[in-house]
Each structure stands twice: as structure tokens, then as C-alpha cells.
Image (tube, rainbow, N blue to C red; front, side, top):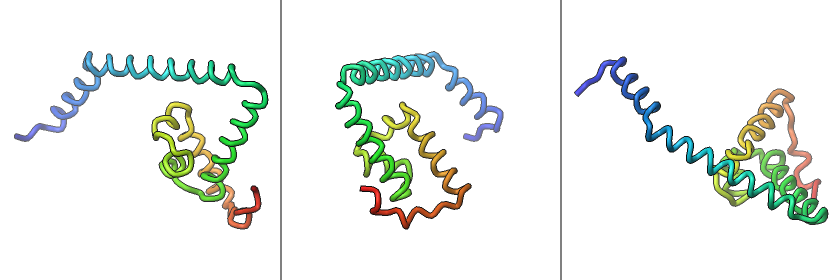
Length: 119
């Protein structure tokens, strides 16, 4: 059974605009907003020392993933941070990762000499 290109596009368009998918988008957005609010409440509950410690650790892991090892986004999430792929999507880490990679490409940076010198 073959469908014309227009028929396939119409089916895809109908599915993308379906009430079920609209509800799924709404539920996803609500979950995302709740998680962000919970994360902010957690951050606000930390002492200055706890915030500094969390910040230092996250930036150190980012530096390892992005500069020292120049890994993919997937590598950073699973192998360096040991967290779920979507956690990085939710907080725009993938965008940050891509900007860092593009910056290295534009600058033609070679950070291999820096490896191991930032502990």
C-alpha cells in the first residue's frame, strides 16, 4: 500500500496536531516546569559553601567533558556526569555543549597541552 508524498505529509501533520500529542506536549512542559522549580528550590536551600561546592564540581565535570576529553554530548551526560540524556536537554546543556564545540572549531583550538594541568 503506497501513499503519495502529500498523503504521508497529511498523515504526519494530522498526527503532529492530534489532541493526544498536544496533551503529551502539555504534560511534558508541566513536568519540565515542575522540575525546574524543584531544582531552584533545592539551590535556594543550599548554604553558600554548598553552592560553591556544587558549582565547582559541575564546572570541573564540564571542563573534563568539553575541554580535556572533547567528548560528544552523549559522552558528557552518560560517562562524565553519569546522568540521563534528557537532564541535559532540560537545562540547555546540549546547546552549551554545541556552542563550546563550535567555538573550538572556529578558534582551531588544541587543548591537548592543557590535559592534566588543571587539577
